[in-house]
Image (cartoon, rainbow, N blue to C red; front, side, top):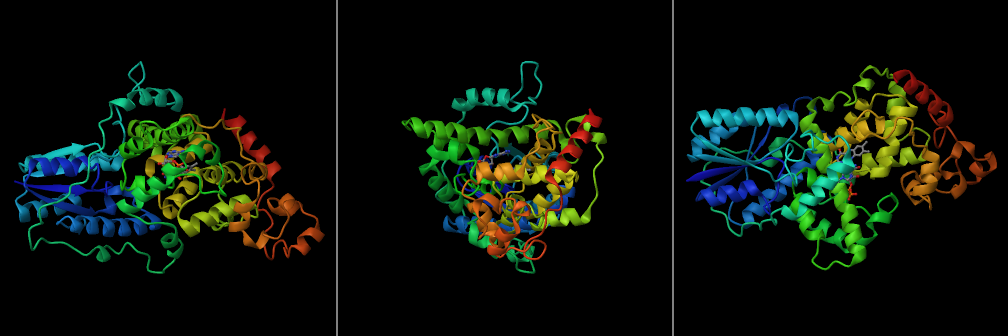
Length: 474
Ligand code: FAD
């Protein structure tokens, strides 16, 4: 019997339930990938995600070749590509790990029905989340809309998780002569090479993911205090690896829950697993409320009027708002394809609240530029900050980037690194150069509007305006 193991966003060999099922039920297994961005509809992968995908596919193919197989890559509509592969190989079983975004769910249901009509068996597994959406419900059998009770329930279920499975040591070779295209021919890499910063920052693929987790496991004890410091590499930076399924959440739980971890490690691991819980929560929410990719969960906010300003939006995107902490974050994003979580909250708050620009404009920019762009996490993050999502920050909570810089970038190292034109300003002024005395600016070689912009907004005034909008909405 021949089975197709259809890889999607589960680009790993370890703890991959679909691959395992294929191996257990067939003698020949054909690992296949189909690049079909149209099937993601308006949320097709952005430029940074495409960059990651290219390298992740190369890594997966290399991993498969090491154990005797290879990745059969196709592009176009998934059903046609699978049918072609079925015809060529005589496969009678197709296995895949489920995705839970609205477009993927619909597409997969159609494909499963069409293959069943063709007489081909389909096996769909969960390799993406700890628990499947729909299995974690409150006492009224409804989805949770608040994180803490959701996580309390999930935490109790953690001991029931099966241990992660090992990667296969050997795979049967794929039949010769199958139609396939080169990964290069997917043209995922940018034509104008802006990706140098991404290449310096990341190692896409399963090996990179495992190394990253091992590295993080060594200092997980300092995560609860360090995770809010954008100037230090204290978080795991596993988000793109998790998004592409180069590592699964079960592997993370297993790795962090050592048998005898020591109190500090255990506390750090719990705090970290809570963040994995947010990922889980985001995916469950999107499953239950699929319209939230483009509309607020909290309907009161549907009638919110937004400002349109191409110049302000561009200043924000380019890290030229004149607010150093915001500009630092936006430049980190552009250069590395990633931004620290606290800075994501601050930059998103400035865009949606101070500048009153629609959260979807921000979500779209993140979508294009983040290597970890993830529809569930991004939607949750933006709606949380904009105040219109589940368990959202209360609307009146408007991050003040000056106070946030004092608190979370106490040595101003983050600003100095990403906004080097301000580096010589003393700590007292570097996060608010517009307020610095002229002599101080001069001494540091800063000329406002020439070497660094004046702020595109007045933080105090714009805060008041945002609060007025909110009181009208209520
Ligand atoms: P760690 O602190 O090491 O956390 C470990 C893992 O937990 C992360 O890799 C991620 O999978 C998950 N996680 C952590 N925080 C969150 C959170 N708030 N919501 C959901 N999952 C979380 N995360 C994405 O993966 N993709 C996105 O597109 C995305 N967009 C965001 C947009 C906004 C406006 C905000 C405020 C947050 C967004 N996040 C997104 C969540 C979070 O910022 C990132 O997951 C985190 O910064 C990734 O870095 P890390 O892996 O070092 O995180």
